[in-house]
Image 1 (cartoon, one colour):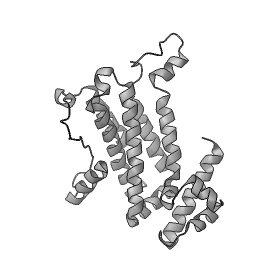
Image 2 (cartoon, helix red, strand yellow):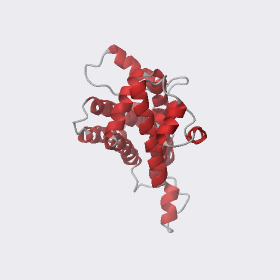
Image 3 (cartoon, helix red, strand yellow):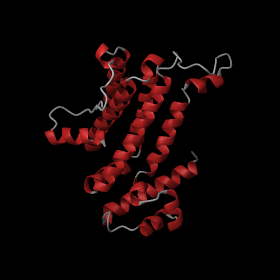
Image 4 (cartoon, one colour):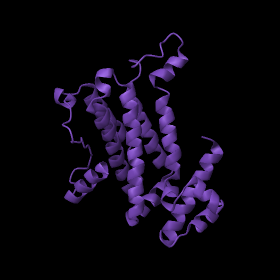
Length: 246
């Protein structure tokens, strides 16, 4: 991605969130956002499509960066860099797919922390606007799908098509979101060590799965993974499960 594109999207995100926070989501027009972001109405719709989309425009770029980061460790990408390796290689033992997914998730976490004011303002906005919460779920699911697709392509053949790809991707996203919510409530805390420890726990569990974890999921069933803090209320549990299922 170019620096100009990154700056343009960041400017639009900040402008939209500032307007929504100051005068309300429903009361803010596309024209006002476009003016604040210094783009025409036509350019706005070409880039962002809707008011909901512009709030997460930075994550569109971040998702692209995550996909590129993961793609660089796919077997075919490494084979092109090392001529003595076959492009038919299905799995590279030198690459730890679980570690690469955690690294990509850390990139997302660092983005939130690095854009502190925007992240905090967006979080406040999400509490007030259901349409934005729905849009956030879509964004979260896209990260999860990217992680799952990568794991299916890079894990050893006997495990790549098992539930491990799905459950690990979902677990990483759930842990990331749980730690991120803690940080959003207490932005003065450095929670990266907590995130690293939680990711390490997930990798250890994935590296030595129990026999039960490799059993096929019955037809029509889904594996749902979510992480909550101790003492979570029943409604918090219900919302977390609903978010995953959505």
